[in-house]
Amino acid sequence: MNVVEVHGGALDAMRRLFPDAPNPWVDLSTGINPWPWPARESHFECLHRLPTQEDCARCAAAMAAAFGSPERAVLPAPGSELLIRLLPAVLAPRRVAILAPSYGDHARVWRAAGCEVVETPDPLAEADVADAVVICNPNNPDGRRFQPDEVEAAHRLLSTRGGWLVIDEAFADLEPGLSRAQQGGSDHLLMLRSIGKFYGLAGLRVGALLAPVEVLERMRALLGVWSVSPPALAIAAAAYSDGAWQTATRCRLAEARRRLDQLLQDSQCRVVGGTDLFRYVEVTDARGLWRQLARKGIYVRRFPWSSRHLRVGLPGNVGEARRLREALSP
Image (cartoon, rainbow, N blue to C red):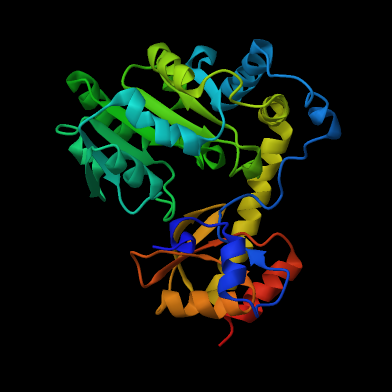
């Protein structure tokens, strides 16, 4: 499996694969907001020093307020990807049920840790036999939603057995009503959050773990001191505190998604799922269309497990949308 089949955002690899494609490339492979929260120059004035406990506490408080979770349940971390990789060392389950299809690193990480991994379209149904159940809500790449009542029922069942429910909420900022953040800190419940998608700050490498205090302490010990830089903490604290930007951005993304849906439908791509940051489309020949787009400098996400599906992110401007429309033409 090559790098462009594992993750989006591998523009360097795409340039090597398609050296004759026109520049600049239009990267629609990631589901990252093309209109990021506007960090200010003043946020970088702390580059000369180490992060303090106060920096971390300020960031955690802003995150908690934005998520609607108890502050004691939130641990800022250097990206949710690292948290995913450390979870097996924190929980140490034997049998893990994971939603499929979904973000592939979940299954890869648990399997590499020696766990028995069950990939299933209905992982919540495994709550009576699994030591841990892992879901993304909303799911990536198809946008599937798990409703609060079914998530709560699975959590209760896992709790009675000493199991864990792990929810990757990387895209939950789009739909706060789906989040279980208000239950942050509850026994046998872990949630992962990311600033990279909704806030468009993927390069900042900031995420959060919502968990019981004893789990946070184990994770904190693995992360070590100074795991998140002062500028990253400052930018995250400011972004999560900016309620007006969050509200306006949800509206902006919803409108951009509607425009993308129309473009895709006009181009004979059937939209079958997604979120306001990406669309999951069904086509006749996913690999062929992916290559057609790539030859024209348009990078979308394809999957090794499907010959009929692609994921398409939001164009950032009229020019990118025009190039996508033209590239989709036969």
